[in-house]
Image (cartoon, rainbow, N blue to C red):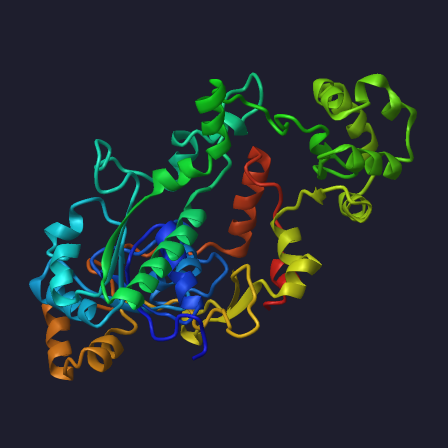
Length: 453
């Protein structure tokens, strides 16, 4: 056994972000994850082809988002509009441990692949249905995506700035945590099955996970009638607490003081300026009441320092602080490199994608290994292996399935080839985004910095 989940087989017929995150996490732990997709629709997870990869004939296999979310998996194509493909799915479910799907409620039932049907072929199957609002209730048919749940769950009542209204955190903030919670649910169900021999259906709602992160706000309303308020970078009772400017263009540090001992340590790092002894900064409550004046004083001091140097000094003194980092700084900082968090994956020569870095898992175990075991699959890459080796389908039968259109390795209909940007076009696009303020900068030497050339 090489990993925690060696011997577990997962059928992954999911898309977008949260559920593929769950299944690649299981693949990193050595589960055999079989990605089931269709060749009748172009695969994409939102990034499009890697702009710097060498143009190839099979451009549909170079979507950056797909590769990020489906590393470590086997890949097959099944056109589930055809009964022959539906029967193959059932045969695969009969020899698998988990089926994971994130279609809208009712879709799998209409295909004849809902839990009740698959339970007939495999009573010990763990079947997870992932949707925005769950399989029951008045909102069951509403569409739900990660980007909306910050607002729907109530998180955005805290993430804006006073007088500006709510702001989103950015990206699909709740997608990865939902994926991680899915892993917890699946492993719990697998443990139950090992104890009882029984499979079960997991009805998972993204909305509920998002709301569960709002526990203190919900408790405040239940007990005090408080209904949240926009605080910017402030805190309900801590001060100083915020992001402060540092030396350089758009350089910042975050500092939090939880108690008087940390405040005294902060004062020592600042060389105990006279203003720190003013009566309205004498204790935690007074500092919180006068936090606007306090933040101004703090900013006058922090702007004289490099954020990383100041972070080291404050941490050594016992004050929680961290430099605000951009993507380059995160991917090249010594802590990440020492921990080996970003892992190198060598794609096939035919793909033209070379070596890429992908995030690993945030834990290390001393008895079992967790790592990216293979690149993500090309479209239909493992059709012959899965159908022939696992299900025992003959070569003649597989050839007939290709002829029928139940299997495929190329999109059908063939999409229009996307134009490959030149390096100069890529730089101009990024320059335009920098001018608009949607991007902070462009680093043409990023491959050298990442040591992937």
